[in-house]
Image 1: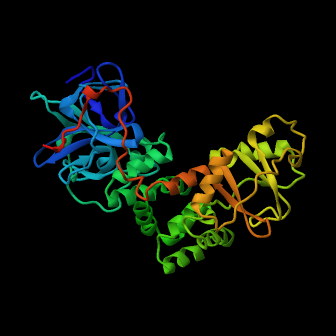
Image 2: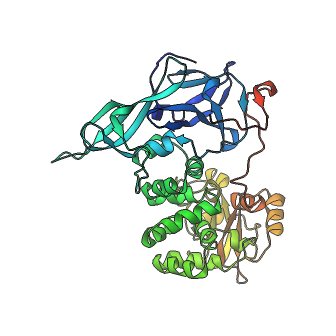
Image 3: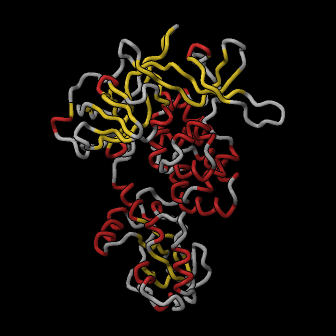
Length: 433
């Protein structure tokens, strides 16, 4: 392997693009795999690379030809088997960052901020430096930082309860919730719980919505009751209902009692419907306006950056009250139509009254036919009195059409830009010593 900078700090590799020799991008670095050795520096086995479809694969260090500023170059021969961590392997970013270890010289406890790897004379890449922060004292909130040799600290092999996650999260700060969910899914249950505890309520809610059901339940149960209720309140009501439906009735009710009554009522209504019905798929919080609202007011709601794009694509116009279940449903104002109208115009003058709502008991096949027939991104759900109950969005329909384990299954895809000769498909294990 060649490298223009012999020493590489691992946190700086997070998200760095990985290229084949011909310049085609293979994916991005998500972690580095090492094996911990008694009395010796940890040896790098390879890197975890995220390729098309959020799949994580393993690239052995022997197939990495260059580690440079802003890029990693491989031999171009990549095995697309999904990476699965062995018990003898350690993820640097996922497991070493934020650990508390001790200085050998003073026995003082320090926090690991990063580690550096460097090639040895034998060609192996070894962890040889640790970037640490000492405990602050007096009026100083943060202790001083320094870089020490690997053998100047001890305690990496000890089990640690309550390991922090601040520096790990800083490393993945720019990841979208779906990508951060992929990172969490690959961590051990202990580390996953620690990272979840370090996320703020809104970010954790966004990430939970992207995780497989088992991971969602595991994280929610690990949270203290009030915190769990706060996170559920930050989730879209339909996603919160889907998550609660995986719990026992007693646990559901306990968490609902801890939630704000108004938020809990929305979730309770959704829990009453079957999973594969319009009511079970809908969100109870679409954009809802009265007939006398202006186009300017409608567009102001649409601009909300926290809204799902499918929700922001149209505005539902109803008679008061404007909270679901609303007054009588009148029609829908499409985003594109709103853009063509004067800001002072009333939304009641630009609504589509032809789009009829579906019953909350409508089955999935009826809902999908409506979406396909009318090229919809969102569909109103109304009761027998034509009151708006919510809206089904296209992303929720797709979620229910895919297999239940689609978030965990291997995605049958090839890496963009790589020819067949660049890919391997041998069945043997592709990583580890």
